[in-house]
Figure 1 (tube, one colour):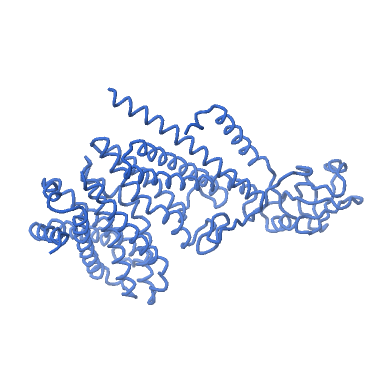
Figure 2 (cartoon, chains in turn orange, purple):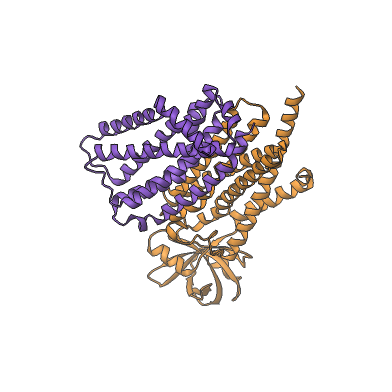
Length: 321
Length: 222
């Protein structure tokens, strides 16, 4: 595509992507007073970020009301006293608090942000790890779209016999392979901190491993064929189409019907991609997720275009020699 | 006699003369069962392990036997003749049916071996579900190995390539059949319990047979 050759477009893409990645880490994750009390009492963590509206300041403590309307008394310690004296009632604060069982309230540890434009929800059992939803899930979605695109190009090659479609199919599958690998790495890191080990042979982990094997076999088949370019391209296109038949089974069907550590396993509804077509997450995270998916997809398209052009030059040089 | 039946008859006749495919597959099965028996003397094998062992031996047995269908044509130099006499459609159907018959005979012999050698542990509780998933699995494996065997008959490393290409593609099928076999070994009314697996198998088979039927002509036509 012509668009990918314009420097202005690439600069814009780079800057937007950098801003998106920065915001994915920068936007504070904040829960409710209920989360803070529950996490403290179950012994998971003592200090929890909470988003709440300041109602009134009394002597020694302040009254807050969180998004569920639960009100909490936040006690001011010497260390943090000065920090919210400037806040007026009605201001929204993101602050880390510690549950104080004896005083039936919360001790203020630190004020993180005053009147934040956007916060991420505290997802039960994930906390700060929920940010990975903006990397891991979009990457695996882009991987699926890349394989789909590669298969469409393979079909187009078989129909139109134009070698450019073969190059595009190769480039798309290579991009899909890269994004599958990235999803595996980000997921593996996530698994380390959520489930304890880097790899658990969860149904989804098994299926993404098989997915990597399929496309490794695709590239291997291509290198082992000792045929003319025409036949090579035809055989590789046929394998690409056959391989894609099992991709939806691996990515959507098998992990859904077996019990899985991932959400959406064993007949439960997945939060982001499900049959009812609803996104079960807070709008802030949902919007950031959609932007992330779109940006990664554009990055994939740019990579695909780049690889196609490299292959084109490569083939032209081979012809000239 | 339609031409696909002629292709099937030719393949069956070649097979009865040499008995290469069947004997290779049976030797493979015997070796596998012997290794399992040797390494687990006197141990009780759980249904989950038995179903995995059954499908490992079926899958690799199929890869040894079924990879021959086009490679042998290429080796004997008969593929050109076949191309002259029959169109792609009838070659595909003939070879597919031949592979399916080979796969079903492989499944029956594996079943006999497992019943005979694992007498204590291998009890099928629900024969209808067991046979159903076995047939559905055989159809899927036969379809994929027919088209992939035609594909690799052109490559340089023919023997090793089929399992590498076929295993990842067939993995959803193998996962589903292994699970369905385990359920058929564990509970009496397995059809209802293994409904999800059977649905996966059925849809995978339909998709694979259709796709390989359509694509075969592309490889066959030179």
